[in-house]
Length: 288
Image 1 (cartoon, rainbow, N blue to C red):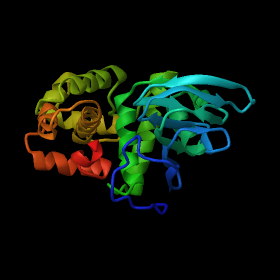
Image 2 (cartoon, one colour):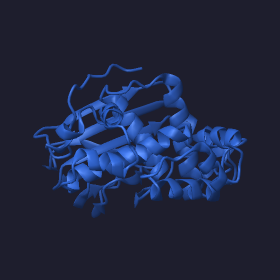
Image 3 (cartoon, rainbow, N blue to C red):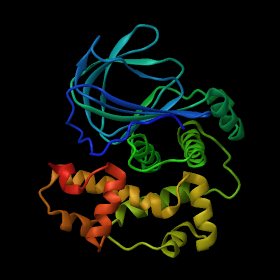
Image 4 (cartoon, helix red, strand yellow):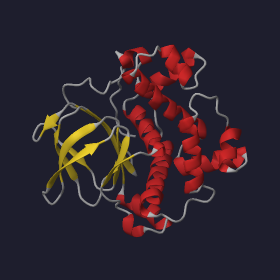
């Protein structure tokens, strides 16, 4: 695992006057988390790498990007959306809003291995696609974000598992991948489960209940879900709850206790502990 700078406090999306970038380098994957102020060309070097998977946690309005062929264009990026890097790098040259972005880039060899397994080798380098929501990729990006900031360590095996799951998911959802690892959930079952979780964050969800949505036994569901997403079901549910909590803290005046209850935490101490692991600080500090 590459060396990381430990962060003892969270980084609210608006709180930076200069670039704050941390990187992770492993044999099969590179990951980077960028907290950036607004910038113009020449002030910040920000490039979406070919074959990458990124999640923008903040909204970008009318940002200007330049492709490898030199052509510039403008694009809006929705908060919590997924974007892919295609065959050529994309340079961000004029961004008027603060940025909070995670980018995951598997080696070309790993991308090809997964694409060939899914019978779409021609799409190993992905394509330039942006602005689409996906709770699975978002949850994986949150896990990398917490690790990159030193809030929640990530071992090499877990990083490899998450990276393979992310690319397999993207290849199936966006490029017509026709096969998955043995025992993984198919796209329709996975979508049904993730939609159900998103609609029921306030409830005390059980493996048995989620398994019933997928029409599997609890044992087979837990194994299949992890093979599909790289995350055990409870971590996926927690990731969605933490994203919801962060949104509530930023955009509402609800008390922390009310937010915790709203997303299914009956124990406030437990909520605060989990939130700190994900964001590096208490809910109150995140809001301030």
